[in-house]
Length: 340
Ligand code: 3EB
Image 1 (cartoon, helix red, strand yellow):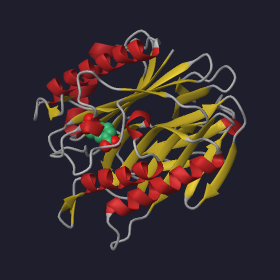
Image 2: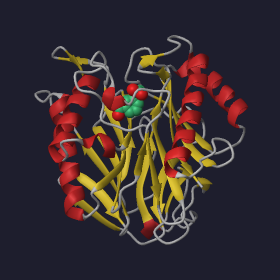
Image 3: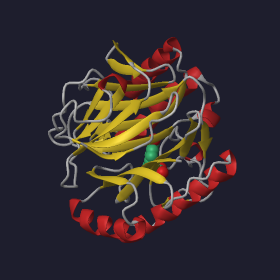
């Protein structure tokens, strides 16, 4: 049963749907042969019907009662591959991949991440989908210190190394991204790539993450605030995990409600900037969207949901997840797919 379906019409279109985990094959209007990938969240992750496509299993509690998974699907049949630990599916225009890696004690996270991204870039080049549009990085114990360096900082370091190896000046082609901490399980990197480039968008209210001062990380985070991609008739905007950050500083430490309102202002500004740079309007409340809301403390779920419902009404579909955020003072973060 599809709860909320994104667009998947037109040639080469890409759709994203939130589907109840209780769905049975045949009951779901998405053709099994056009599924590019599934992202499932839960501890343990929910069962999904056996379909031949990459499945990301993220050990992260789903706070909403309704169990849903996110399905990425196209309008063309996919071919599915497995190569060096990476599962990926492509359909001629878009490639969706999942790289899940178990960590060993003798390997620091920067090296794990560098190797993962090098493998991803090599795969994308070889497969003919060289443009990385969007990544999701789910990392066990993201805030833990590993040999004197916080693991999020190690992630930034390893990611930076990999990006600069393939492009000495990657600032203007960085993908949108999310980095969230999990409590257990593999390092999971999901990614979306295309044959043709998208347009990265920055947020005028925020310092570009790749220009953050070094107090946040020895190497600045390699991501853009959003990526706009025209799939041929339909345009999508992938908003990176957006937090209560203005300039480069956290705002409203300790106040989840004020952080949420700051995030909504940031998303508003991001969508306005996207309209300006790409000449495509993505209205925050009149268009369509799928959102994922990451909440640090489970007790903040109900007030956050109440406030979001107040602001957004019944617009779009929202998954509420409990995860650890990259900075200790952040309580909530929102990522989104917008389309029109
Ligand atoms: C921030 O804006 C909040 O390192 O890829 C959000 C989304 C954050 C992605 C990343 C980090 C990343 O800095 C943290």
